[in-house]
Image 1 (cartoon, helix red, strand yellow):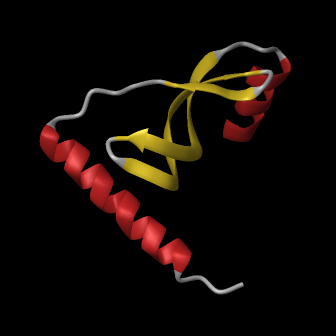
Image 2: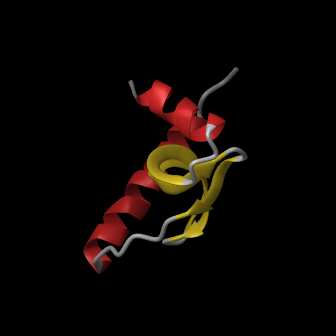
Length: 78
């Protein structure tokens, strides 16, 4: 159902806010890792990020999670 909704938004150029996984650059000092965050989605795919207000502790935990994920991805040998 989620994929169906994302496809509908893209096909109809709805510019809807959806929680979708995408590359993060510079938000909460996170760079170069994909996270599922709210974004405006339209005919061109992700058109812009939607900023979310996090407390200092929440932002720190998100950064720690992103750093952990990035280390795991960098350790994968293809």
